[in-house]
Image (cartoon, rainbow, N blue to C red; front, side):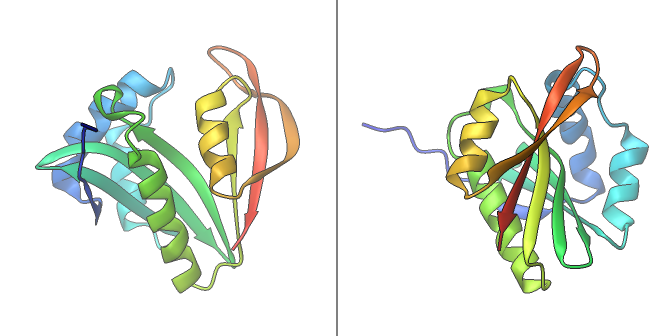
Length: 150
């Protein structure tokens, strides 16, 4: 029998920050700070969401709506919840929200070596449009720029 992992999407709020920071720290070599996440929640351009499994944050996404474009700024799923559709579900929700806000495209950068994320983004309709040489540090790596029409 297939395991189910139901989750719900909510806008991020202050009570989610401790769990978001835990996921951020295990996901990235240069993690965002508590202040950064707090600022994103009150920014006029950010849409910050979490995926909850019960009361636990299983993942989060921060996107920026600028003019008619959604830019994916940060996304992570807790290691214990990966490969269960949570990243895809959050992205689908955020893309639908972007359309409601009048966006006509979405962009993101992803590490060239992150094949799982690139596959997920491709499945969502993103296409590779450019390489940003040396975009990432710790470790140094190029970024693949991906774009999707909404």
